[in-house]
Length: 134
Image (cartoon, rainbow, N blue to C red; front, side, top):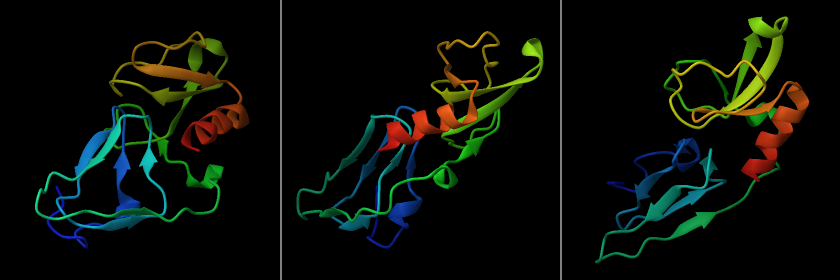
């Protein structure tokens, strides 16, 4: 819940897996874009006495430089994870986190309850993430 409109820089807010909720609490803010890893983010105003205004200004299209690269077992939100697969001649596999970051990556180019397999091709994996964010 925001205590004031200048409490945080809205462009530094990141809604990770399963989103989250930001209560504007009667404050007005402007985003260049809403950063999210899935569709479950919620922005609400539970202040009955004050109207909130949310402005999304837009920005240049995202590029691979805008992606946040994660590390296995890290609790920091990230867009994409790279795994050097020792069971497949050190092939690079790319994943999106869906659940617990401490669960091991699948080793057979598949997804599971915690990891979505994107590709073994770096550019294809990056493009899937960029497509999902636009």
